[in-house]
Image: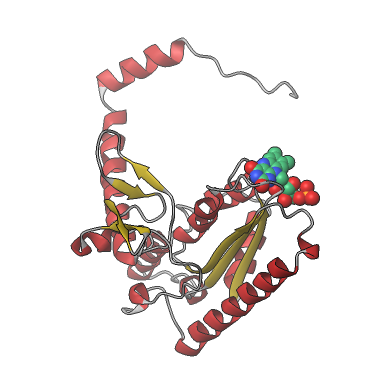
Amino acid sequence: VCSQQDDFKAFYEKMIDADGVLFVDPIFESGCTGLFHNLMDRMGPGHDTGLLLGCSEKMKAQGKQPLDMKYFKQKAISFVGIGGSDWAVRVETDHAMLAMSPGWKVVDNDYFSWSKDVIMQDDKVERMREIANNLVDAAQDMIDRHLMIFDPDNDKLDYWKGKKSACPHCHGNNFYIHPGTDIAECELCGLKGKLVVEDGAMTLKFDPAEEFHAHDLLSGKKLHGDDIFENEGRLMGLYKDEEFKRRKAHYTSVIEPTPSPSK
Ligand SMILES: Cc1cc2nc3c(=O)[nH]c(=O)nc-3n(C[C@H](O)[C@H](O)[C@H](O)COP(=O)(O)O)c2cc1C
C-alpha cells in the first residue's frame, strides 16, 4: 500500500485492526504536533478510502486479488488535544483532518487547555471517561451493523457526540473567509456557504444540493479523485511540451538545493 518501508505500516495496520481509535496529542502552536501531522500526511491520499476502493475494483477487473475488506470497515475515531496553555484554536481541525482520508466517523473532538496537570483536574478526567465510553458505544454500533464505508446509508450516519458546532455537516468550527466576500468555507469538509446567527450561535448555511461535495463523503471523494486524475493526466501531457521543458530548464538552472548540514 505504501512504498516507504518504515513504522507507518505497522501503525496503520494497528488502526485498521482496531474497533475504534482514540488519539491523545499535545497541542503545539495552537494545532497538532508535527508527529501527528506526519501521520496525517501519510494517511492521505494513498490511504483515502475512495482511492483504495477504485484501486481494489481495478485489481478485481484485472483478475487480481482485490484489497482485503478490512480496509473498508467503518471506524469510530475520537481526538483529544492536551495543552500547556490556552492556545488551541486549530487543534480540532488538524486532528479531524486525519479522519477525512479514510472517511472514518468522528465521535468526539475536544481539547483541554492548561492541562499539564490534567490528572489532578477531576472534571477533565470525567470528560475523558465520557469520551472513551462514547467511542466504545459508536464502535459497537458499527460492529453490530457490519458497517462498511461503501454501504449506501453510511454517508448519512452521524455518530457525533460533541458540542453543537458551526458546520452542521462535519462539526467543524474553523472557516476560511474568501477575501472580500461573505463566503465561508469549512476548513474540514470544504462546504461553502454563509455564516449566519441562529439561536445565538454561528452556523454555516450551505445549499443542501451541494452537500455531496463534502470531503468526507464517498461522493465527494469520487469527485475529488476524478478531478485529480484529470489534472494529473494534463500534467503528464505537459511534461512532453517543449515550452514546459524550456521553462523548467530555465528555473532549475538558477536554483541549487541546500545540502543537509549533517551529511
Ligand atoms: C513546540 C511546543 C509548542 C507548544 N504549543 C502549545 C500551544 O500552542 N498551546 C498549548 O496549550 N500548549 C502548547 N505547548 C505545550 C504542550 O501542549 C505541552 O507541553 C504538552 O501538553 C505536553 O505536556 P508535557 O510538556 O508536560 O509533556 C507547546 C509545547 C511545545 C514543546
